[in-house]
Length: 380
Image (cartoon, rainbow, N blue to C red; front, side, top):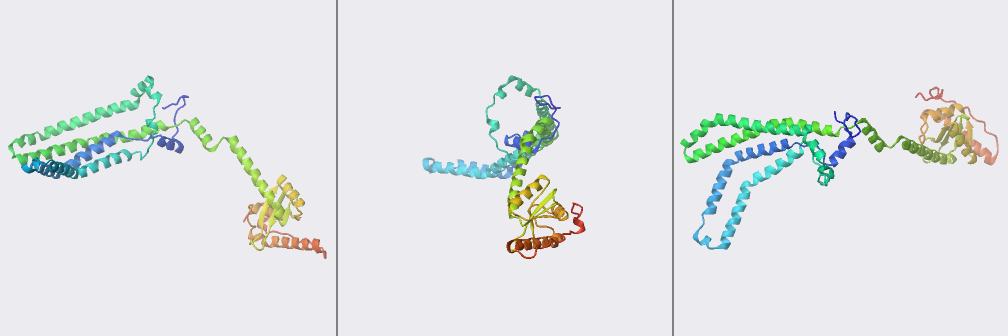
């Protein structure tokens, strides 16, 4: 089982952050056997399928190149033109092959781990010059697997080649009895398809190497539980820092809420345990809005701020609890409380008129709430 420098077992799967960091460093799963197999197999198969066209094209190119008139031989400009044309014809003839091979080389390289570009692997590291680390790499499991792959490739290719030669020996012997053109064509087919078949044996090596490379890559990225905890602290912050941030955010929210209390139309209290501040603007609000609320010490602060700003304070324990538990800060009150809050606001308006102009003292209305809002919790 893998261990890190502290001796702890690396038993945990790598986190998303560890995977992203390894990709940025260019540490991704790669299989050289997959790349070798794809290039060899596609290259030989392409040459076999294009052999007739390539043979005829090259024969014609050689014929045209060596068929030179006496006049052209003594004209350097004409000879340069013929050379340039021969090079162009050769590139056109071999163009499909030159296009296929780079595409196959790129696709086979990125199909396993995807595209990743990083300059970090090219940076010089003194640790790479350490004899101890070099010896450790030589006797590692990965080195053993590489040795086994090499032996397996040698055995497969050598074995398949021996079997093919034994199977096709009679066909090769018969070639000397054929006419030149027919013999060359037959030899081309025998050698071409034999090479394709031999290259196909590398599929088995790649099929073994790809899962191993994926497993080895994940094994190298595995983490200890302590590393995961340290990463979580770095990502999310230390608990004491997070607690302080939450405390500051809470204090800022409380200050913003207290700034809204002087703008309220009425404060409804429990009278000591709860306090809620309501505001209603007929021109911009569809229903009264809860601009502040609090319990115990916060409720006392709301009452003090309201008293300093001359905001009316009404004692109604049932209504105060109903609004406190049913309405979020900054939201309008539930529709079921519209009627009772409308009575309250009408009373506040009458009280304001009485205070400014005198007259009959308004009586405080009975503020009853629906049964769903009683008991301190909203059941709706």
